[in-house]
Image (cartoon, rainbow over all chains, first blue to last red; front, side, top):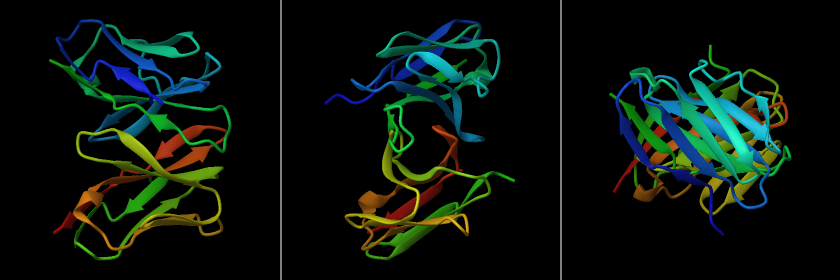
Length: 114
Length: 108
């Protein structure tokens, strides 16, 4: 079975540009999580969805960040406009909507904003 | 003070040694996770536990709910075990809060 699929794997762009990160959930999973990993702050939850509905977006740093689930198997995380401090590795993870189920992580997108 | 604290931050050992990584947390949790991240790689869930002990191959995870403490043990360590090990706790139904990670290096 395919795992969580993230694209692109690497993105380098100039500040001010719009960045779109994509994530495909594992088939049958109905919870989706976006995380950011930096050297300074480690892993942080940005936002998560259950059944396509955002549940907790308290980790989204600013209005420049937005996340959507246009359908049950796909999500996007957009940054507009991007800034150098947004440079990080962004992971998405999916799981079944049950507290006893582990999360399955994608391979991450390494984002560099110049 | 972080809600999830790991120790040590870095650990270097020789192949074959018994490894212990510790995790303490200060909040109420519904589960605790141990994750593994290889350099430049993705994140793999090793264990999810809410009580007692779990074992998978050479890896053992324990949790003491009363003391708010968990340990990850690796027996007969091998260079391929070199990775960052991350402790995370589930707050509420699904929200994960992470420790800073322990970088483990096993030398041949």
